[in-house]
Image 1 (cartoon, helix red, strand yellow):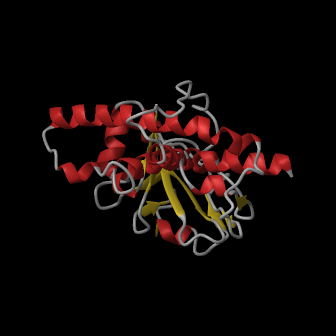
Image 2 (tube, rainbow, N blue to C red):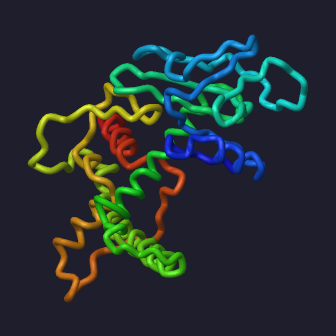
Length: 252
């Protein structure tokens, strides 16, 4: 089990919970979190990467088991009581701020690639909240009722994606099929999921969830059912924008 969480969960209680369950964890932390080095010196996380193009962590793997007696372990969370951890920090050029990650795994750039997988979680949040079902507007607070509502949203989300797959299949097999409204392509900058120099095809401008909504809105659902694909063949595939990019590059 690998727990990925953003800054809202990058605090000692989450570290303690994940550790007690025997999980691996990669948490994004705020810049003011203190790090204590083996020699006893301390620095804020944000000081490890002072500007774009800087990196800290690769090649600095240290033990995290404080019970081994090894005094080389890093420690974090001074105010709440030091916890043993590793730190990986990267500030990519062109990005507004760095990724500051704490983990109980080796300090390697692989942690960045793992944390980047949270992008799918963020897209799900958007689909269920402000950009989709507007879950919070229901103001459901009872846990049992909320559980039933979420179960319904899961089915509804799958239905939308099932609508989107047939309609977008040619977007990744025939990139030339693009909207006539396409203007100059924009650059896509997703850390560790694609180069900032890659061009974003028109199809990648919308998520599969949004494509599904477009299909439903343009279909007379009272009289006909949109084409559906329930096979969901891309569970382990790259993200939708990345697959569109790959198809475009293959065609060119």
